[in-house]
Image (cartoon, rainbow, N blue to C red; front, side):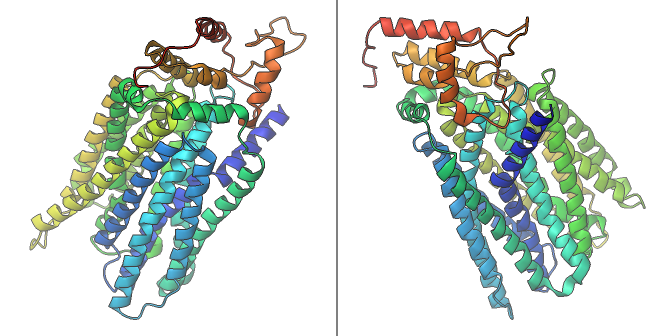
Length: 550
């Protein structure tokens, strides 16, 4: 038991410190710190919404391009080399940003130049993070099949939502501590410190990937055959089989990103309104933001735990999370007018925090998992890449929507010195709640049920479809045969082995490179004989006829 816990802990630490989630979360979160500090340096309000929106839009545009290209070429090249490419790109742009922050700013022209350079560099960040996200998620989802049943989904969360929100929390804690210690008289130094850490994290990840790619990440013969087989699956058949499912998950994920991105950018405005439309101290500003980020981390942990439960699953967790979020959304919309003019206005920030927690517990923890769990491993790269790229298009729409909302409220309240800010908090949370309900409805009604053996089920469904069209699936079956089940010698209730002893050793050696920190593997004995019969009948039938597409 202690050995298993130790292996589990070592595997978790390796995932946390070598995958891209922590870097992505920190770089995205540092966007707010950079924008606030630049706003204070220009002697304007700390809430320079336009600059932050421009930076976020360029970041998301880069991520759309990176995710689409990575989805197209991860299946053709290799997930590890796509991770290496994305990490290298992120390192280059992060170091460039850290060097740019060292430049002295003495007038508005130099400050404007600094803003333009930071905005352009965000597109490079986005491209690297997009490539890295798809490659990392494909690699971890393939390896999750080799973990104990019930923990596959937790492995995916470690590399996605939990790491991302930990990085986001770190990006707000760093300026919070620095401003708390040194005050607001060292803006340039705090900006340089934040961007330097943003360069160290991807550089560390890049170094770990170099060591990993050169030592333990060498492809086996089965993996190379699988990569070759993936490239031969025609796009026409892929589109015909996955068109409706891919459109559904892309739309649901995009609606979630519209809500999450818009509210993420709206956090400084929430703090501004609760402070009586006066800019608070920066340490207080980052303190409130860190509190909301801590609730996001808690929501990711709870979502990871309950989704991995067999009685819950991703769909039920998504429904419950959206229901809780809807309750808090209604509370905010109904009580914001009363609480804003009362001494209990900080209660609104508690409602905001629980609203974000429910969002990450439900949709935030399950959208990417539903995208992975509704496709076969043979086409996971392009499927996930296209769905993730569509989600970032939703993030761009969320940026534009929150900008239009802010401009509308400012234009409506212009000249009214006694105007309240009830609408400024009612509209965004009402829109976000409606979008999350719509995204959940699409995901629940339009996607198939995702079980713990999603790799095997989706692979069999795709293979049957390809065989009906005359496509040979021998190479796919050869790679994707399930690994052997764990055995306990001397036990009367010994589980049945998935393979005979001779082939068991060969299959175990072929899949050894994909094992995680656990030494136990899922058991699927019922599916193996049927698949072996299919392969034998296909071989006995002679060479397959030429496919209609040539």
